[in-house]
Amino acid sequence: MELLTLLIVLLLSLGAGLLVQWLPMRHQPIATYPQRAPFLGGGTPDSHAWSRYHVRYYPMTLLLIAFEMEMMFMYPWAVVFVEKGMMAVMEMGMFLAILSVGIVYAWREGVFKWQ
Image (spheres, rainbow, N blue to C red):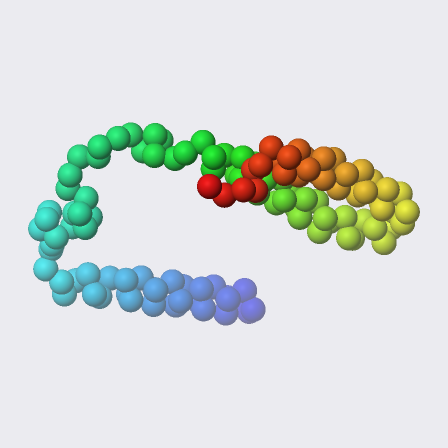
């Protein structure tokens, strides 16, 4: 009985969502191509898309990935820390030390100086 109720609610919500999407489209006239084109997007580009990005953005991106990896590993580590105890602390210490070496190297290379 509960599964039937869930299925009915799911079908009703799906139908309501599709109805909300379909009704406005039914009453609007079809737009011409100039109306559908992106704003100021009609000209040909002067250069390729990849050539617009300066190389100085890439080291910042690598640092962002390093910090994201750190956070990604620290959340499950908090759960494992309760079970493993001091061994988990030493493993996280080694992981943070390796990341710290990368950050110190980036600092020495001047990655954090925005020009």
